[in-house]
Amino acid sequence: MNDERFPGLRRRGFLAAGTGAAALALVGCGGGTDDKADSGSGGPPKRGGRLRAAFAGGGAGETLDPHLANLFADVARAKALYDKLADYGADLSAQPRLATKWESNKTLDRWQVTLREATFHDGRPVTAEDVLYSYRRIADPKQAFRAKASLEPIDLDASRATGERAIEFVLKRPTAEFPNILAAFGAYIVPGAYIVPGNADGTDFDKKPIGSGPFRFVSFAPGRSAVFRRNEDYWDGAPHLDELEFVVANEESARVNALLAGQVEYAHELNPTTARAHEGRGRIEIVRLRNSAMQAFCMKTDRPPFDDKRVREAFYLIADRKELVDGALSGAGEVGNDLFGKGYEYYADGLPQREQDLDRARRLLKQAGAEKLKVTLDTSAVAAGFTEAASIFRDQAAKAGVTIDVKMGSKDSYWSDILDGGTLCCYRSGAMPIEAHISQRLLTDSTTNATKWQHKDFDALYQQAQSTRDKTGRAAVYERMQRRLYTEGGFLIWGFADWILGTARNVKGVETTAPANTLDWARFDKVWLA
Image: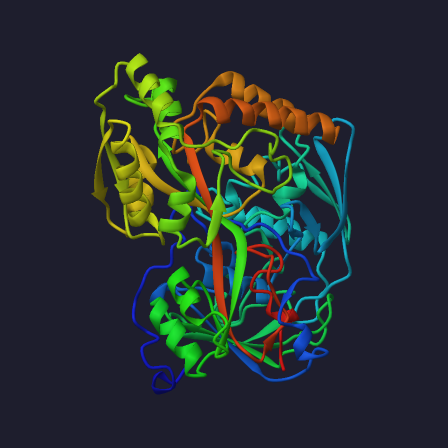
């Protein structure tokens, strides 16, 4: 990349991918193929051209190893070069990709997966052995690959190829939601015995990465740019674009200015004020991916004052959710109801919408002996709206006689700091299946259990749901679990924020219903330049 062409793009900034379960960069909430940004006015798809996409990056340490994908830029590059067996659709259910079908035995502890006919960029077929190699690489105990926890239910020693394109996965326990494992964040398929000429350990993906994705590798300069070219032999149809270039621009202002100046055609993650300033003005297109990011306050249920469920309920009732959405998100979102996954499969949408009730909140606090409660709220500029939400909630709590001390934390260490420390914090999450949210955050041994919600009977309900073959029966168990969380859980989920993109006016085919890290988010093989 010629830096003179992109002034300001190399300024360092923070991409709010976070750490662990708090990261928005985990998974997104699906997309449909009929709802595209301004695609109608562009006429039929046009072949050719190079699209330049600006993302915040990870500096000189960036890699194209798909199993190390962490930031949004990493994932967008990985999905251009590689495929997974499945990916998340509009309702967060797993949609077939390299896998054409999956079938379980009656006890849900063995799954047969059939692969489609697909080839890697070097012409080799994608086989069952490649899948097993990839999963075993991810599960290597000496490595810290992101998808390792997601693959944990699979007994990879017992699993085997039963044909060139057939795999029997043996599980450690019955798992009805096994397809979600195939769609897991970072579970990309790479060629078995991946060897790069001149590289003894075979793990240098940055010089000649070989995947089965829609684009082939051309060049990569960590922290600066990556260029890919159309894969004419892609199993899902060759991309419309000739080339795709990822440009690193860490500051939001740099991404916006590059878009306005015609230096890039796609800018990832814009803030609501930018969107409002440019929406409908004719210079660029603003794409709002609705209901993308859960916004919450996280209460630690294992320590005072939130070890008393009456105090937690009081805090639910202190929150004016509309004021928080309007003030912290500039209205770019919708109110939450203290449950994760609004609009997703298994979401308990029959529960009444919780409203502010300061009188009841005060009564509950008095019953708990906490009339003049003082509590520290940890926040940070780590994510859009966090500091604003903290200030708004502080003022709301004062009306119920609660004194909140807002404490600003480091952007670099915030997610790790709040995982175990403190009592109350600002929190956000990207989309993922509701069962994944439960397994990662709400079981006794969950590694990212930020609310310290630890109840053996709740764990047992999760195991019951996982081993329930009948979907209606499984949904009933999940609803029972959500009713418990709604009544006494540690997440005060006040809103769901829009995820905002900007594109040049000639960019067509961008999905408008595919939040970050779903199948159709950053899916540049389906985009064209009119």
